[in-house]
Image (cartoon, rainbow, N blue to C red; front, side, top):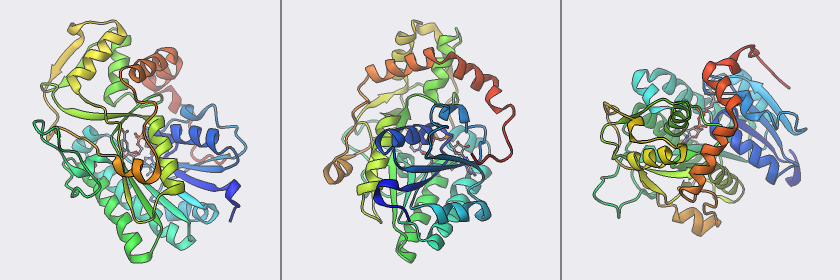
Length: 343
Ligand SMILES: NC(=O)c1ccc[n+]([C@@H]2O[C@H](COP(=O)([O-])OP(=O)(O)OC[C@H]3O[C@@H](n4cnc5c(N)ncnc54)[C@H](O)[C@@H]3O)[C@@H](O)[C@H]2O)c1
């Protein structure tokens, strides 16, 4: 075991959007900590996201599958705490084919829990989503998800995350594994794979294309900057109470049409850039998070999510990182990917 000043964190899915932002923030705030990043490098995992931290003396990358106990076991033995991001994360893909979601999000989470218990880790933080609560009506702005809202997922993605939440709760109740669960609203910011709405729309708008808007565009999401999310996760990891879930949100509800218009304005395009397309199957109407518990108990609140400034800064980031965008849209970042890397 390490001393408090040199904690060793096993991060799963650290080459993805939120995980890579979390690792960067962790090294800024806790420079003496060590991070092992276990990531399978699926289509969504990209080592370019971590180019600026790969030479940090406390960083190690392991390419591997969270479903593989043989890979996970020794990494758990070396870890003090776990932050579990790895997941299949795109709702539309889960509608096309849910099997990878069941495998990674459900079986993978259980494999991690079993190995964490065997190794006796101090804390296991499971990164989940507000989507496990299902949807809220559009005509009841007074309603928000609290941690007491029943789990009632709609999409195969949300159902797989809900299953993982319940397995985490079971590991706490049955075995006393010190688990924490965070449920966050929609994230935006740098390094997001351009299948999610903001980077997809920015890519299209910056390159003269049109943006596919689902249905009437009235579906509402709460938007939080990814570094606010990362900071909330570090707060819960250090100060949260095992067995508890914490909602994380930006108090920043926007419908998709409003989001699209704001992006069009920032990118200097006009209304003709919108292409209305058939709605997503089972599209949840509204998500809204009551994040008062994490503020009251742990003192966290968002600092970087002010709208539209934070969105403008995000578009600027994508504009200024044309090479990152080119490599990701052409798939070039995948060329020469090692089968297994332990650096
Ligand atoms: N993006 C959001 O707005 C949002 C909001 C709330 C919660 N979440 C949750 O946060 C977590 C991270 O989301 P994200 O947007 O960064 O996802 P992402 O798709 O960008 O990244 C997922 C990462 O997990 C890795 N991975 C996938 N399967 C794996 C496996 N079997 N073994 C090891 N690694 C594997 C991928 O290679 C990738 O690097 C997910 O658990 C997601 O459910 C996301």
